[in-house]
Amino acid sequence: MKYEPIHFEGINSEIFMNMKDTLSQFGISVPEGNEGFLSGEGFSGVFKWNGEKETLTLELISKPWFISYDTVKSVLCNVINNYVNNYPIR
Image: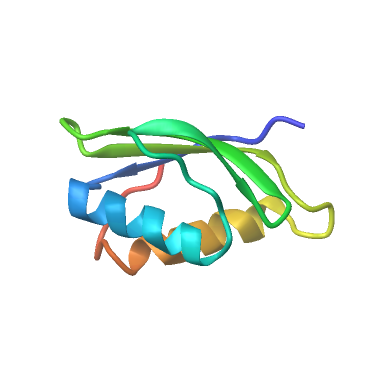
């Protein structure tokens, strides 16, 4: 199943690094660098951060069958909201 990518704006380098640390605390393996494959706890996806434009795109590849995409999206947005007060989601 293909999931709709989630786009965030206003993601500076400090926010991006904090988000990567937070995902690691949730057991999600996140590689070094500005883009790549992340996985763990039954989830996998790809991310791409553009430091110049301060944008981040997350695309879910797989998830546990019993968790809805909307739930995953909501949790990701809540984690990011801990670092950014106001961000548009496209």
